[in-house]
Length: 247
Image 1 (tube, rainbow, N blue to C red):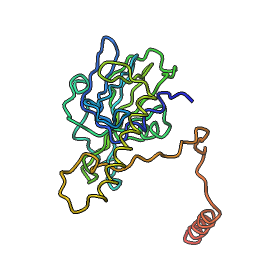
Image 2: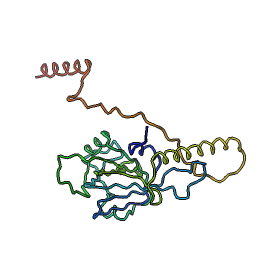
Image 3: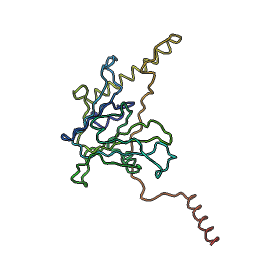
Image 4: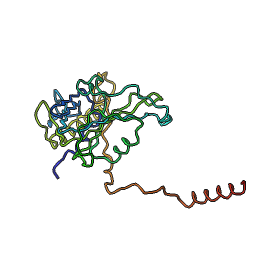
């Protein structure tokens, strides 16, 4: 089966956004991500950056939620927010990011977020659904009371990866990703053979293997009403009877 853009999110394991460029006139957004890639022969790629090009962008929404579950929505404050100027000239340095394409879970996180701000809006027909709804979420700096989960939702017509200004075939990217992790496995197998020798820390020492989550059930739809088990119904009846007695 030929690879499609829906195969891109797993390839961004431990990827970091290093730059962002928004062109209002062309309605194009570029996200530059430092990715885990190697040449197919195992040698290092001098510049492993992948440029994701979003074309036909008609809406960008930034949204925020507390990273800590103990923070009440009424007490939440997003001190650091993404502005439109940030998309034109990225000031946040290298930030770990995750990408989801047409994801119901990401849509739920957007809908239930504490704060939403529209950065770009050029939607003439609100009833029409965009071909692609892409969510980019940024890893929080911390999960304490002040931590913030930040994301941007992008409506666009197309998404295409580039490397050094040249279109990057997704199947080639997948092979490069596998080559990186093959090198990672070789690195750790050699670690056991060379115990006792002093070695400089390598890049591979800081990464955890990329897992492949189970594919989401696209047929799932949330229930129309809350579901109660027989135990819950019994508790409700007991509470009701006690309230009547008290009254």
